[in-house]
Length: 145
Image (spheres, one colour):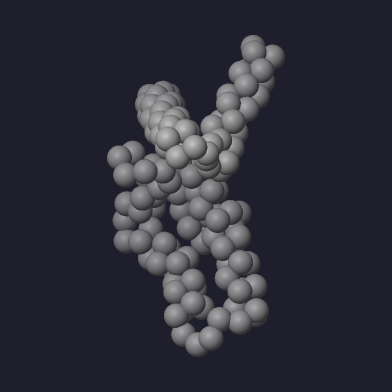
């Protein structure tokens, strides 16, 4: 497979404490990340950004994005890692939802004080998209069992 020729999953580890994704664990991983990011820097730093450069940037972003997702999918995880990751993701999601709900409440209260009702539709969309994802996941998992 191309994956085994270009890079190896052993070069990376799951990012546990600093967000989502993966972290290089050896010099080969760092070189791989640098080579993946360098074209973005080169295409945006020198000269005028034109339509050709934008197309190249988008194509490279798609290729790198697909490869980064493939790295994350194929990182080795045992059952303990899966459970810890699920708990961490759940806690992160609840924190995000709480902050978004507080934001909606603040915007609604500010609107009432000003005599208008202003609530950011993007925040509402994020909350409802999360609700929809939970519903779909639960229906799928119930039917799967």
